[in-house]
Image 1 (tube, rainbow, N blue to C red):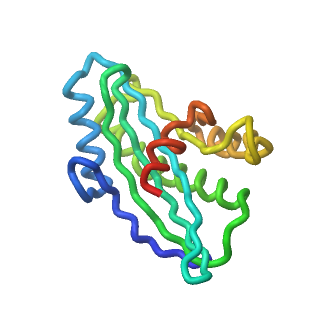
Image 2 (tube, helix red, strand yellow):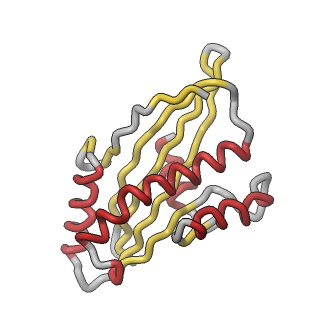
Length: 168
């Protein structure tokens, strides 16, 4: 599968952003209401399309900072990959790995500006107990847990299945 990294992060209200801008935005959002508790969510979804007989897969990773009960901010980036249509298992693994890579890049930076006691971190995976991905739940949850993160699956994986999905 050919890879084209065209993914800068986007904010619906601020436009194109670097990771450092996102970290600042998360810190500002938390500072607005420092007594509230937050959830930091990272999730990836993908969509396969046929274009001129070629398969193209759009992978979208979303970073969401959710002020429990009082709103959220989110950021997303898209990466296109061309080539053979991926098998479902490969797509789910790629989505999970992209979320993990994003978490490994951004979480240490966020921890420097926002106390980990102020938020829960979740990796949202687009797999669930119904449908063809049910056999993969233990594997991908194990990948996420093995990297030191909490995994959420359907119906609780809205970061992947709703927010990221909106931009695929």
